[in-house]
Image 1: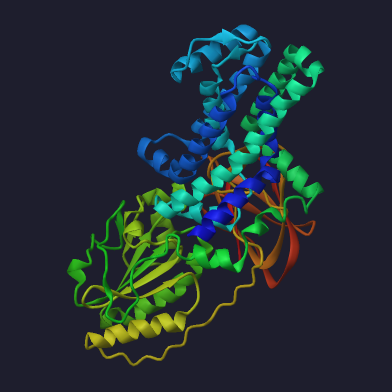
Image 2 (image 1 turned 120 degrees about the vertical axis):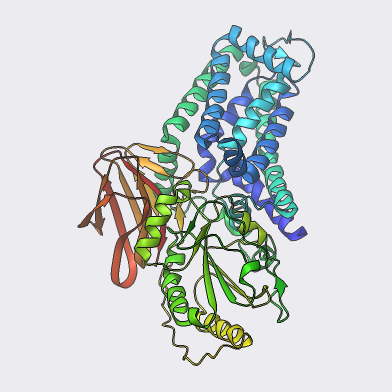
Length: 538
């Protein structure tokens, strides 16, 4: 744990150089070269940022789920706060009003004016407000440590380890932020020209803050990031390598690791906690299934890794259900639209699933099993104990062998040979999310035209394009529309490939080649109805 805290702290320090942070730097610079009359504002910014980044990273999904507040609204509030402070630098009376308001909210002394004409001793509350906004807008190109924590946070599985790791990361990030602010203030003290032109400098940075807010609101910040990455592909590529090592990877295996024992004796399996409807069955409970062997498959219908395991699970269900095997799918949604019963029912029908499937929209069963994976398999014996688990794809022969062993313990006669086809995976390009909640700027992906980002997806305007350099055999994209069918043109290496009509909320196959290789994919959008969630590769 100490190792992860140290590397998270170091990763936080270097994240200030990340290309994903470039659009936010003007706000930090503005706070450093303005508000010099307040000695407490830098501390307020740091405190607000640490609180905001830590809490929103860990609990944003939970807050959205509990209060039904869209992430976009919270993000837009942060943008408005940034814009208001920009306006306050342009209009002195508005500045006094803002500073006085935050001074009273933070319980500080009444407003006084310094020699620079800025409110003095009243900047802590305003600093906290800016810091809180920065924490929600701060979307670094995360490395493996923070990525692991975020994967826990989206399911509501937040441990004390995850909290302290995120806190260490935010503390590391706050240090260069604070140094930039203090250095800017030192510049005021050492350069008389700056001090004598404070009013002009304030207005310039006020305009910069307003323009920054507009850029973030309109999505131009992401276009700017993509431009920088495309022009300078190596820029920032080494920043996450500080934490990408075998020592860190070994430690990360214990963060949120499933605690269900895999011993031969077994550990009592947690009961199923429905979070929605049941399909293909009346509601079931593990208590009522004592005496049978139960295979729980945690999946979600847009996950390509889950989809590739379904033929094996359906085969096992057909082969062994008469011998006492019960298969139950635990559908834990990765995206909001996967919570809709109609979408899940259609996916079950499309995949030809005949065994029972239970919705786990609240991730209650997921958390009960301390799960972290799509897909995940839990094999439960006749006494209700977990005896075998497997996470991800592969090891199908081993899983089927475990099924046969547990069925034999019930007295069943199992004589069928094990002959699962092992499907090779060729993808070298990693799964790539396009929403602001988990998305990151990567060198192999770029945008053209106007895009409207949101927490889970990115939405193009008419005529927009997306370029993707990939190394794989197959390319898949999770897509939905905004209520009207969307049309997408697909080009491979500059040659038109096909049209796709987005008429449902699901995973679409964009490319399926005879052999793997490195290629350039371009998507062209002829309308504004498509919503792009995540790329996966095979």
